[in-house]
Amino acid sequence: MGGLHSPVQVQKALFLIDRQIPKLIGGPFFDFRPYDYGPFDKDVYDTLEELAREGLVAVEAAPGMRWRRYRLSEAGQEEAQRVIRSLDPRAGDYIAKVSKFVRTLSFEQLVSAIYKAYPDMKVNSVFKG
Image (cartoon, rainbow, N blue to C red):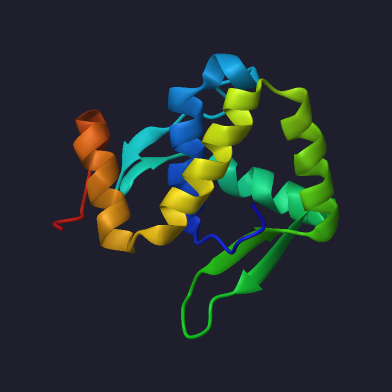
């Protein structure tokens, strides 16, 4: 938690959380559909913007890039810890692992890993990696 996440990392992390542990978190929360680079839901960005307005997410420009990066603010980290403590411990462990996982892979590796595990999310892909 607290690390910078690119848009694709946020989308894929939330997709994995929604797909793998929905019952542990009271979800799923999003309606991911196959898109250009795998699972995508515009509501993820709407949620991030709402959290930014509430001061829970910090949004930063990615140097030299068109997209923005996201991280939990200090208040967001405190709220996330409160929520994690209220969940089944397996959920907190999984969320931490997913956050780290998506940040350790390159864009190509991450999209490829999602396609390998979820081939149904590749049907509309423009990614040839």
